Length: 483
Image 1 (spheres, rainbow, N blue to C red):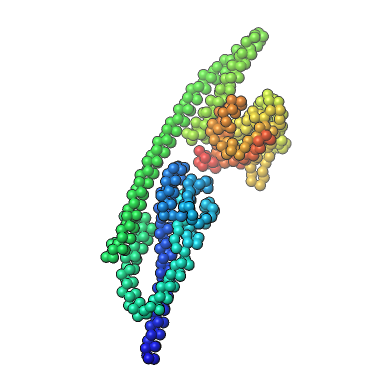
Image 2 (cartoon, rainbow, N blue to C red; image 1 turned 135 degrees about the vertical axis):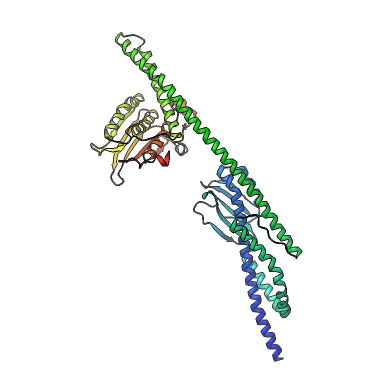
């Protein structure tokens, strides 16, 4: 009896240890496989969503979401600006936290019975968006309780039989599953979707392996389709860029051809105007209209030519030292008639002396003229203040033009420096212009390693600020970065 008791207790003890170890292994294995499978599905979905995110294709993104919701609880696809392209959630499922953002923690988190994966969408080593996938499954507490229950039943039911059965069944059960896990890890590690799980003699396990192989085959097909699509998009992009370069070359050539006769028209009109002015002819005013219209048209053509050069990457800097204060006074003399035309008062606020700067004076003058002319155009019976100041801490100079005009809202400020951009069609009809001045100014400032700052309030006014380095030696420009 005592020997039997000892043997029984020994067997029970050994079985307790074995069942506990088996329960713990099953718990960890189930958790790891679930996380691995969910992560792999998330990687496949992130790969499939890369093209829709890059091109803002909401329809394609919604198709991915619809397909994913057949097995997932919820999915959300957002772009790099944290704007949701597509999202979905099965009715009656758990409530989810907000969608991910650039600061969201990437990884796997457990939400009760569900697992949430936040994964970046990467194209050519650049994060273009985020994928938030939540898959529902058994909770960790359920898995733990089930494993403990199995251990208790095995202990109470048949200790020796359970031990023998375990020894016989475990190799048969875990062999194919380990092979499947090895295949999954191989696919995840190498990205080779041609790998397949080997078949098993057990029909049930064989069906699982066949399903996995079919899934990998479908992923491989979609990966090939995506690669082909990306190639086609790259070819289309190259074609569009070539067409854009051809357009810029055409605009540059045409602008040159238009400027030559137009300069002649303006010159002859001014000569005739001077001659007729001495004779007190009534046609003098007509000639002044011709000259003014010609100069306005020449300004528009010069803007188109500058923009064409920018797009063709043909802009260069003529760096030399000059007196910034003298240059601003010259610009102020040119702007004063424009300001007076709308009843505005032009004010200069700058120091009496300033160290010479080394920049491209022509482009600096054009930038100040563009901003100042805009202020004169969009302000009536107001004040326009031009401020120049040194920034000793950064070896820069700040030039700002502040007006009390119509002002702008944030939507307009966001597209302010885009070519041909104005508030709306009524702005063009009322104030004129092509919408190129600020775009050219922004490019010139960046070319000189500077930056633009804008602040504005509707109905109150706007303030444009250029921050430029005081000295820009040759070879240290922003040309390579911006143009």
